[in-house]
Image 1 (cartoon, rainbow, N blue to C red):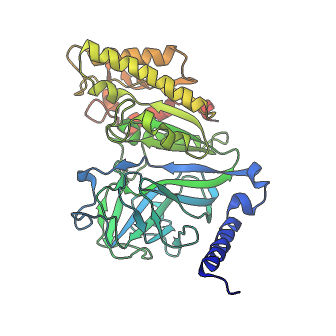
Image 2: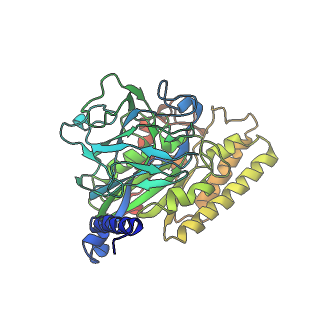
Image 3: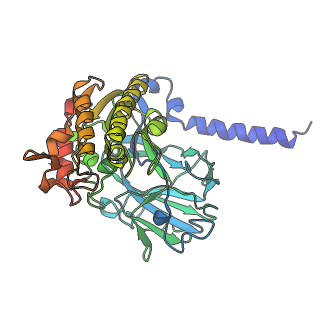
Length: 427
């Protein structure tokens, strides 16, 4: 009897899946691999719905579609290294499928973040279930096949993506606060060593995670934060946000060299209510509990909740009580996954628009910080407030550490935050 078309299709699919299983490090290297290596996130960018002002510029955004016939080249700096690597693409906010025509991985020229050129000969194709193209379903993410790569810690990578048909919607998933330059150019330029004339944009699009296969001793520290962690006031393409500077410090010591740092922050984010991105309680599972290798969590968020609540005693009392309850929920949910949680005190904002004449919001900030320090809810406390406030005026940041708006820090200020985190908590 001749095989039916369905039988042939099943056989072909089974063969393809068998080949993929053979390339799966956790399967191909035998059961002993589970005791010596595991997947760990080494870089993240919190997915957000792209606001109109952060969509790709013309001609890369049309009236009903985006990134049509477009090459997108992006750079990112991983934290810990590994011997295999895989990428995750997110369509979390897409209302249509996201078709990826081709993806390549390379090293940027001179190892520099924000570079449009790559090292000649370093480009490699990225595949998905053995195929060079793939489609990310609505609201889903897609993990690439592993690539054999001896990836060193703190390496900058270049990921180049081509979308032939683009996304047939303007609901594009991105991370606008990249503080890193990406490039857009018409046509399939994924194999090109440079993109002369490309359009630069300081945003990340589509890409949400990089994972590495690393020894079991390698773990990740995730950070929940807002613009202070996302790096507003830091230097574009310099990787000098406070999580970056913390990682640079940790990797110089053998006891913490294998710790990955995952920056899951977004400007304007809040703990209780949606703002720029979903609130922390809504995104905790997606951004923290489901990330590979996370064993510790730093919570440094809440100032936007206080600052956007009305400056009245009743409103500030309510937001304070709600924040404390929310912190408790974060700890309970993280502890259930075996994750230790460290709470960071909120920074002063005297002189910023959040500062109200009656000091209602300042009173809330101090009440929240007192609870963080004294309630015993968190496994440890990082007193960021004490580290950067002005001793002569504790309602304000030290003038030399702030960027000019009396809310955000400059790179020196972010360095102070990084130095405040005890390395012993992250071993």
